[in-house]
Image 1 (cartoon, rainbow, N blue to C red):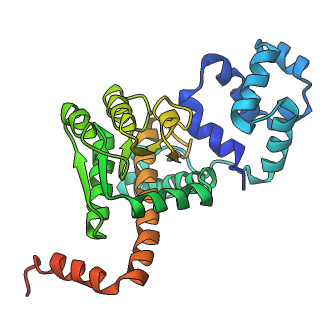
Image 2 (image 1 turned 30 degrees about the vertical axis):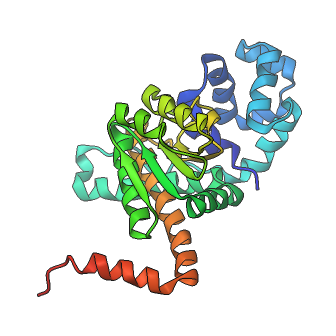
Length: 283
């Protein structure tokens, strides 16, 4: 099933070029007008060349302008008014909590629409078949990468989070084709992460990328790309929503992987639970 074009564009918007944003603005703000436009008319209205419009169409639907209009038309029924604005002092803290719940729910739904079953299944299979996994992420992505690493370790999957950017490159050089790299970068443009991934790929290592921009330089180097979306309700909250969407994907993947591990080896699963619970203090 093809992702919802509105959700996809909203999640990718910050990573579009100025020319692409002109086209996206018309599509998102006036979808009915967009559908009724000829390419010549849209070119004149937006101040963008017909070639740029066709390139935009190929980027987001793999075909020409006519195909893009059909895809927009098929997604029109999904549009709805934004239920809440950003929080303010008048709402109080509980009001802010209520707003965040709705914002995150929208971000999660956008993330669900953008990632297809085949991609998610491929990521799970890559994780299960890897001899060793290395996780890379810096700044805010470090929180996500570390969480992912801990969840996989609790499932009995050999995983290491390399936090130092220099050590990530050194460690990547020691991996082989039986290993897996999971690179977390919201922008997909963090140089240190890209450098480490390139070194790993030079050794035949497969890569899963978790990002908000599926067209980023990092995403183009990965065999599998998991896209975390925002709600598009408040630009100032975008990065926190992307982080929560990344954790949402991680939890879903690990739940699926856990079910497979449980079916194939209950003894190992319970042994790990026993080891973890043994570090808890009894009442």
